[in-house]
Amino acid sequence: MTGARTAATKMTGQPTQKEETMNARRIEGAVALVTGANRGIGRALTEALLSRGVKKVYATARNPEALRALRDERLVSLRLDVTDADQIRAAAEAASDVELVFNNAGVALASAIADSTDLGQARREMEVNYFGPLQLLQRLAPTLARNGGGAVVNIGSAAGLTNLPFVPTYSASKAALHSLTQAARFLLAAQGTSVFGVYAGPVDTDMSRELAFPKTSPRDVAFAILDGIEAGQEDIFPDPFAVDFGRRFQSSPKASERQVAAMVSGEAARASRDQERPECARA
Image 1 (spheres, rainbow, N blue to C red):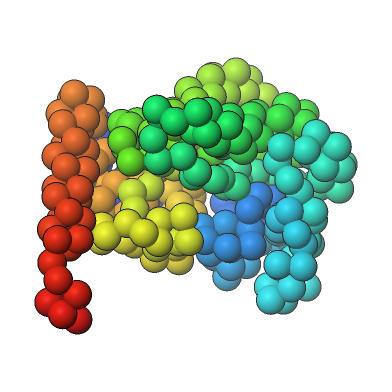
Image 2: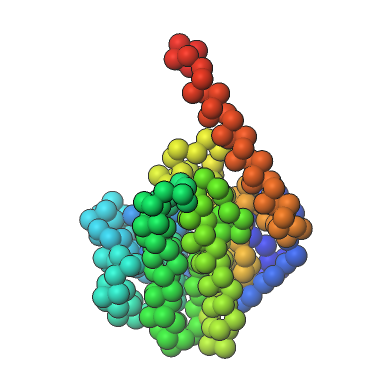
């Protein structure tokens, strides 16, 4: 495969940044595991993997009943709360043939940092968004090595590169995941494991329901992620917002910080105007 690019890059025909590539990973015929597969990007990834011809998908969720609608003989449902060490161990034992690990499960809870309740929510975000992937990686890295190296795909966020002030602690947890991605990429290279980071912009999921920004469908994001993996693109920007953000961030992290601040300020001003308008004017 030539000219390795993310699928998001293919949308525009222009690279998001200087090409950084690793070993490309073939989706067809592979065995994958997806956390948080019951909705949003996780569900879309599971469906996209099946459509791309994987041999098997371990689809995990805190409640496996939520996966019943995903009917395919290649799908194996597993109970997995990524904050539960016993469930992580059991899932790792069940998925002894896994080759592609998608750390997708995530939560966004706190919208501020000043209130005392925000601390508990921030801890929960860090447990799910950072410590969950770390624990799963610890359990599955030896399995990946035995199975030829394979790949880990960490579903991060553009918010992990530049903090979004309306989800400040979620952004911090995704920044931690980004740092873990960088470390794992180096530390697992010797065993032949590729580690991909995904940095999506606004995606049309339950998590972003209240955001008024233009959003990309989870299906489009999922297929862009798989395209990036097959191209060997270590940092994947899977939607139009992410493509533009990736360029700005590559050029100047400070410029991307200012871009986000302006975007958030504009959204706050719009929300304030909407609240001031009489109900009849909004109808």
